[in-house]
Image (cartoon, rainbow, N blue to C red; front, side):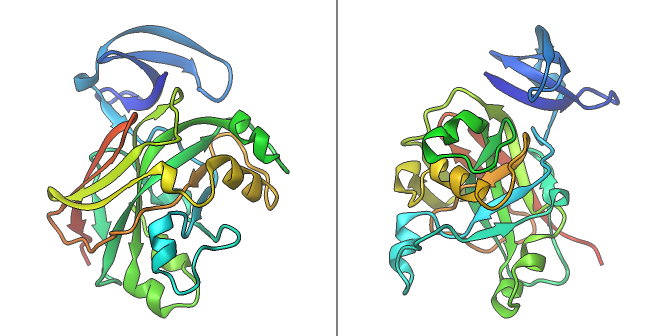
Length: 255
């Protein structure tokens, strides 16, 4: 099943579900009780928003084999985490703004894992039971700030630094999915989810040993090598097999 958040004209944002190229309204939210209405509105007639408004966003620093091999330390023994505020989230085709404080902003395609119900100390073999679905994330970082500051907080926290979308896919086998990122039609990143160092259930288990995971929270499961710089006028296309494409334009933030 594919779930969306969308807006039609000046109406308030709504949750919906997709059947072929039609959207049906939902009463309620996918994370609780809801009722699906008939899918009778064309996708082309609505504006897709970020499919979820997360309470927490937890990222994993290094989780693909190639970056691990390139690192002097080799593979990490445990996941290294970072956090992004919910205010970074935007939807498909919304603009990523390059902040005036940075001269080197980079992109990373990520599989975004959406938690479906609350849990703490979740066993690895139960991790999948707590996952609602998956969407695409384009993780944006001010690399020059990250390189010179001891904490990555500011570098990852600017508004518009986490496009999500275009929808949540709940019926997906994530064992071997191709992930790519193109910037203005130039292929920058390509890898398969089979190259992850820590599996998704392992990440759910590890993170839930630190903090309670709640419905709607997002785990960014890591990015392949190939992250590169962005300039105004770029168009980022992040693609994950079985989910789709996430497009976002890039512009310089005005002073």
